[in-house]
Every structure is written in structure tokens, then in C-alpha cells.
Length: 161
Image 1 (cartoon, helix red, strand yellow):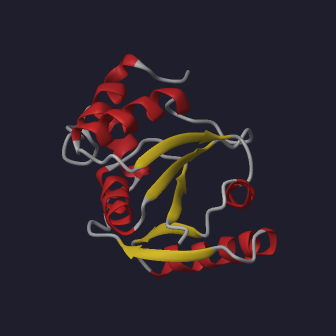
Image 2: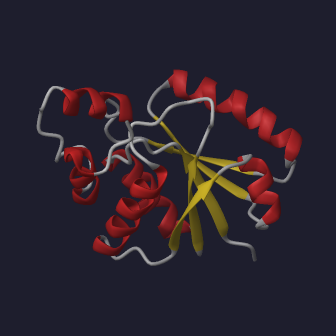
């Protein structure tokens, strides 16, 4: 049985909320591909390469061995076809997230009709990448919102300018 899933996002930055979704998915699937999506029309605060390394360090620290991190410069639905993946993991904080995800799901299903979505309820609905970036910009302690390896990147070592 195909027990592979993807968990796509910009992960700019990767938060503890994202990590929670990864942990839940890793318990259910043999392999989870964490896809760092790169959209050329959007600017990033942190390089995908730096975030990939931070996520990999986090997975190692958490002893999560059935996940891999991939930087994707393409369509998520096409990636699922190319890699024989039938499941996409998404986290939901509220009904606005659900409506947004359902719109994207409809588009992805046009490309890959076999793709199934699995929604996980977010535990800490206040945490978002945008919130973490703003707190960091004002020199607030972000260590309770992002993994240690991400804190290191956000502390100024590897930023996009």
C-alpha cells in the first residue's frame, strides 16, 4: 500500500505549529515529504536552502526518520504525480484556513484527481509564520514558537536581503 504523503508550505519560517503537523503525519505515513514551495513572484525572508537545513536539523533532533525535505520550484500536484503520492497534509487553525485550503484542493484535484487531503487541527491557532517574523523584527523571544535550528537562522545568520 502507498503510504506516502506530502506536507507543502513556504515555511518562511518553519514554526512549532508546522512541526506539530509533521509529527502527526509521520505517525500515520511511511514517508512524508516536506515541500518548501518556492514562488518566484513572492519574496522570502529566509532562503529555502537555509530553511531546508533547519528543518532537517529539527527532524534529527526530534528523531523523526521517515520525513525528507524537498525544495520545490514547481506545482505541488505535479510533484504528487511524479512521486506517486496520494495524500496531502494540511493544518487548519480556523474556518478561513479551511475555505482557503478547499479552493486550492479543487485546483490540485484538476491536476491530480487521485490526491486526497488530510486535515489536522492546529493546536496553537495563534502561531503563524507572519506573527513569528513580526515578533522577531521587534526583537522578541521567538524560541517558544519555532524550533531551535530555526531560531538560529532567524537570529540573523542566514537572511535574504
